[in-house]
Image (cartoon, rainbow, N blue to C red):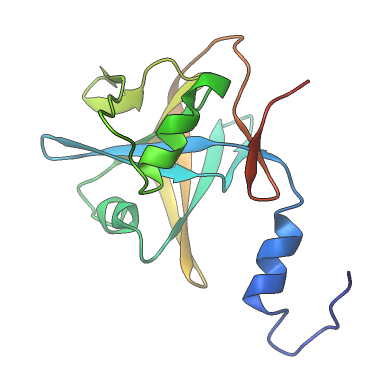
Length: 163
């Protein structure tokens, strides 16, 4: 399907449908809110640079995580790349918690991360970039660990696994 060019770009529905054709991993962005641990499911995550090690996450202005990450005193955030077995956590942090949800939190130097995930990153906010109805948070990776487990994959609005 093709959509003609418009002065303000293509309509949001068409944009969402088109970019849904891009398969992505599923991450949970985490941060500490005082003593509380907060998380948000995000597929808008990308590596930016190897030297220095930089990543970028995109957060909707309406998200509670946006309010938290916008605070000057919140200097670090975490990124956990979910494993195939963690689909329920993707739903949980997207606002659809299941019954008796148990999040396998663990902490690295006071920053909450998701245990059992394929990879975890601890990032220091480097730059905050307004971008339409989202804000882009550029983070310097200060800590990383990973496993060889299979990741959770999202494509055309559904979860998939690598075959």
